[in-house]
Image (cartoon, rainbow, N blue to C red; front, side, top):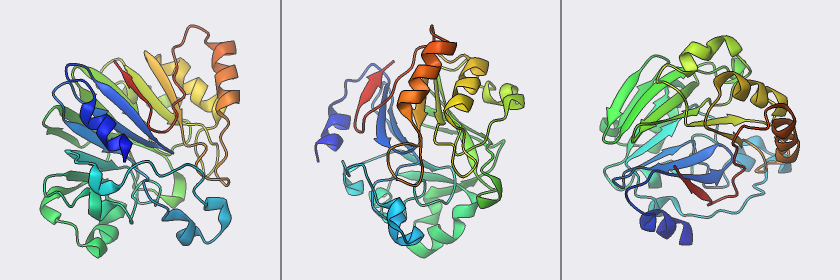
Amino acid sequence: MIFSETIKLALLGVTHLFSVGQAGFLVKSQSGQTLGIDLYLSKCVEPVEGHDGYHRLMPQIVEPKELNLDVVIATHFHRDHFDIDAMADLMSNGKTRLFCAYDCVEDVRRLGLDSSRVTYVKPGDHHKVGDFEIRFIRSDHGEGAPLEVGVIVTVDGKNILEVGDTSLHLDWKEEYLSAGPLDVLIAPINGAYGNLNEQEQVDLTKLLQPKLTVPCHFGMFASHGGNPGLWRELILQQIPAQKYKIFTMGESIQF
């Protein structure tokens, strides 16, 4: 598919951030190394949930085997974050390293993934893989995923925070900024299943003052909610100087 070629051809010497929809993002470093977070690439959620509220509404833009990634991160076991129909293909190249929450253990075993390339993580863990420094922090998805983690990726001197599926915790500011000021904040706006809603994402942006704020977790499923138009209005009304980006699938920025 074209998207995989777009990643390959992305210019070296700059840092790239790509969106693959839902809470999924890819980072390409200046030297060309790649890292994916919470990639939902298949249609595996609807059969698990058993109703059309989880029918995939966004197109599938890439086949997992086409992504020759260095690192994959799954913040928790929910199927739109740990894609059970894509993960084996993502790991099939023999080099990709998977960092995932401890609630992914059974899926890793069932899929027969190479355990030597799988690392289970908890808040406070810190790993360096090639161009990527990865810090795992707290995330609060409630009783549905108590072992979930958030993640701070430092690459090319830039800090990207992906908070995971979480409720609002303004008291976690020190942890969110533990790697330094943020270049990019990625946080949900759907307001379902304990996640931040549009206003809460804005409140977190006010607190952390990233150079760029990015909403996620909208548009993929009818049952998830999330209104990027409302979120944009709130940003413009409350913090008009804040830079923001609402991604379409497959779109990228350089920074």
